[in-house]
Length: 155
Image (cartoon, rainbow, N blue to C red; front, side, top):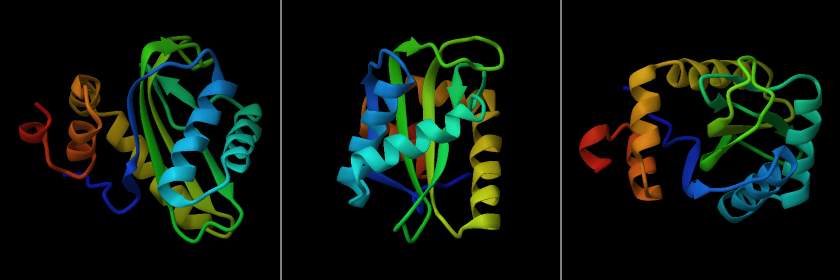
């Protein structure tokens, strides 16, 4: 069972969010990161947008993992958003994105950043997990799934 309670705060979750593009989405992710982790909204949004310019982090199936290294951050942090409606994201399969798992890492995190990114990617390539996430209509259910609580807490 994958457990993300170590990197995802309950305050860093949103369901039913709408965004009219990556820029607005990254601002909203920045706002969640500001509330949950005390980060600067614009610093987070700008870092995610800069990384996205290198290539889309939408890896297909309606899922994206935008990620960036953030100055002043002392640990790995995640922000998870379920979009409704799904938003265009320039994903590899051109499918609009409705699950976004933003990974924020300390500037010097190197291998830990890559390891955590791989862990998130593996989790989001599991069709059953993705289906359960899509079924979460409230942040409490989303948090239960991400914390390894399984489907019993997601209803």
